[in-house]
Image (tube, rainbow, N blue to C red; front, side):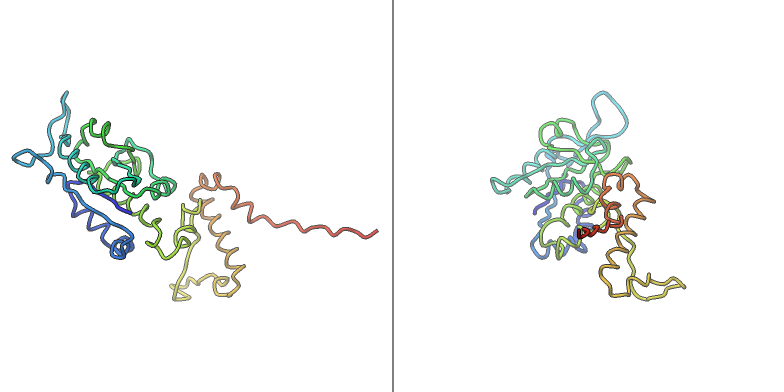
Length: 248
């Protein structure tokens, strides 16, 4: 899967997406991440990429020409027939969730436009953007961090990036509820011991313990998620024993 990031700060994005699991996915050839510096596409003799907004107001706005040319350059060598989606990271966009990440993972190419200052000219959104996405109800300096968040979440779903689908299917949110607490060595730390059931070797009991813990932590911290997935609490209910038919 290929990502094209259109940004004023390519080194910032590269530093995040070039490490850890995503970095290994790039090295292994499962991911291709390309960076397009908006200033490189400016036709202004001073390489300016922003200007004051019509109608007045505080701050500067990224102009059309450099972003349009960057998008066109990103699309220029994408194979015909590929599924491509151009995304502008914006607080006005659809709220990003794991479900959205799954939707986006079905595309061959994602192009991210990272705004800065007061954003970008609306005509770029009208002509080039397929969707606006928001990572939350708060204000950031630019679109680089949101682009990294979306790219990271989507890239993990690309086959081969993780060892198997099991690596993410049972995680918090991906499963529909929060994940159960986990423990590693040492067995006792500051007087706190690993729950004995995890040392029992009884896989059925371990699975039951983890399900109970996941439901409990979700009920405490995110009851809204549990309300959407009542099947988890149903799984914890004792199964009724079938009554034996009496012989007449």
